[in-house]
Structures are given as C-alpha cells and as structure tokens.
Length: 147
Image (cartoon, rainbow, N blue to C red; front, side, top):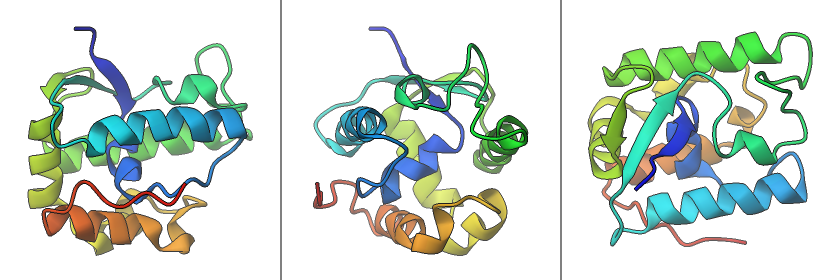
C-alpha cells in the first residue's frame, strides 16, 4: 500500500478540521484525508514530509513544488512542519503507521503547544485546532463531522 503523504503540520490539522479551507476542492480532499485518519478501523502507512503533500495538491495555492499563497508562505509552512516533526520525535520523510502517529500526538502534544508549533497560522484563532488536539488526548479520534 502506497503511504499517504502528509506534511508535519497536517498531522495536527486533521484533528481540528471542520470543513474550512482554501477552496471547495481543497475542503473535499481534506475531508477525504481526515475521514481516513479518524476511521478507527483503518491503520495505514503515512510518510511525514516537509513539502507539498497529498492534501496540498488540491489547494489553489500550490505551485510546482512549494506553497505559493504569499511570498512567505512556503517558509512558514515548512517551519511548522519541522517544528511538529521535532516535537513528535520522528524523522522527516519517515514512514509510520497512522496508529503510531496518533499515539505520539496524544502523548506529546497538548493544546497550548499549538501556540508555538502553529504560530501565525491563520486557522489557529478559530479554536478548532486546540479542540481537536484535546479530543485526541482524551482518546476521541473519531469526532462527529460537521460537513
């Protein structure tokens, strides 16, 4: 089975995702990723990257190999990716089972960590990200979806 490619910071985003996004196509793709992550019956390999991933490919801001939302966006998202990868103690480009990554997130990430890990992210002020991490820590991976 080909691993799902996910950016380091998307490992956290999937837990707070509530359907907000950059375009209808991006939202649809992100729901697809989120549904797989939240499905407690599925376990599958995920390659953790600091680069465009499977979700990014549906974003209107992706370029050939970088995020092009604005002149600083690629540097910003890579910084978030690398902070999350370091915080979880995993390797960039490493392949892990979804269950391993969920366990690491539950053990090592508390909601207030997002103030550092996701500093200056436009979605952080909405509060759904911290709520999602709190749910993971409480063992509630399969949240009710508000599509």
